[in-house]
Image (cartoon, rainbow, N blue to C red; front, side, top):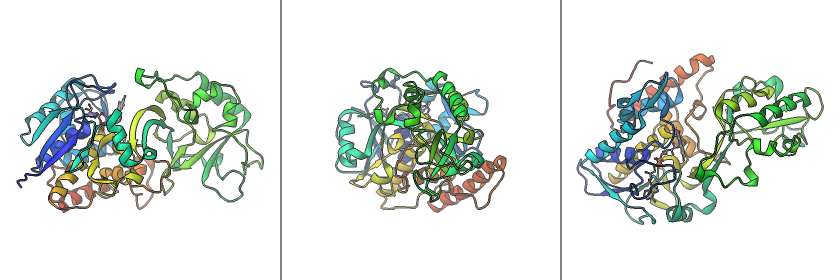
Length: 447
Ligand SMILES: Cc1cc2nc3c(=O)[nH]c(=O)nc-3n(C[C@H](O)[C@H](O)[C@H](O)COP(=O)(O)OP(=O)(O)OC[C@H]3O[C@@H](n4cnc5c(N)ncnc54)[C@H](O)[C@@H]3O)c2cc1C
């Protein structure tokens, strides 16, 4: 297929590189605008495209884990990121970790070797009004370009800071220590309350206030808004502060005792089906290990499965369910697709996957086609589905996890669940590839 139409991609990070290579592979002439090497965000250091800004891990390599499965789908679709990762892999047990420098060098070279891609080194301040554009400037999009996006998305729908509370799976909450209720209501209620006795609270408080915290990076220091203080900062103000804040028990009656609990954590449904539950007000800067230790002291969470842990960091992202059309274009500017972390996915792998899909969608758009996206039984489809989940009132970026997939038709023991999700996903993903005329880049593995 030969094309004259051009696609402009802004930002040559993980999403931008994947998008450019995907579109170029389909014959599209791409201009890739990148502000490196003259301008660097506070997290980028290297002149190379496709830089990993922090950890060198692309997380689990196991295809029966959600992120392993996402990488498998990406590699079947011809991902340059998974190819670069495999080529620069370093030993890291079950994780796919890479030599960071070599990884970026391989990805950078792949983009430069592609004759359909022209790299333009410039810092973009305004979005092109015409012609297809993929915006992939990442979580540190700032300055005039962010202001421009805020104008198009609406200032209420562009977030600059991410205060993330942990999320647990509903089925892992110990219901002997939890009850559904809204405050001051006898009806069953929308919140799952996790009560603590005075002794349990004292132990939790002691652990919370002495737990290890992640040090803030320089560009993250200034802003904790009163409305979303880290739980440990709130606790540091006094032993009773949480009892008037996120752990207040007022308006709740524990059906086991008929009494008001001493303290209570509330869990709120994160998805329409209520399979994932958010720990309300528990945004935190504790280390991941400390979070698991401290939060499991809450009796209902003693054996909880955490699909996301809390964090607070600089992160620009749009309120995708409100701002994007189903085909990932801005409702207010149909020529612009938003890709990567800026679109509301979370993580290296997820950002890359989103870039691939946007590159493919943009190429299809140039051919006058608007094919179906992968179904939500697949990892890629589940990611997109999250961006389209209009039922979620408090949209937050999220790593891929099985809670985002369509539920399995029947219940399986925990140990078998990942494989069941993966088998169904692989089958459906291959069917989807075929339906849109893409040939798998390699033989799929046996799962
Ligand atoms: C500090 C920090 C640490 C993170 N650590 C991890 C981690 O360890 N693991 C993980 O999975 N995820 C991590 N993330 C989240 C996320 O996965 C990464 O940010 C990922 O790089 C996002 O990919 P992206 O392609 O969307 O954006 P990026 O990789 O950031 O790419 C954006 C590109 O756009 C360019 N750009 C920006 N503005 C302009 C402009 N105006 N004009 C032209 N070019 C521009 C940038 O130079 C950059 O090359 C982290 C995020 C941050 C902020």
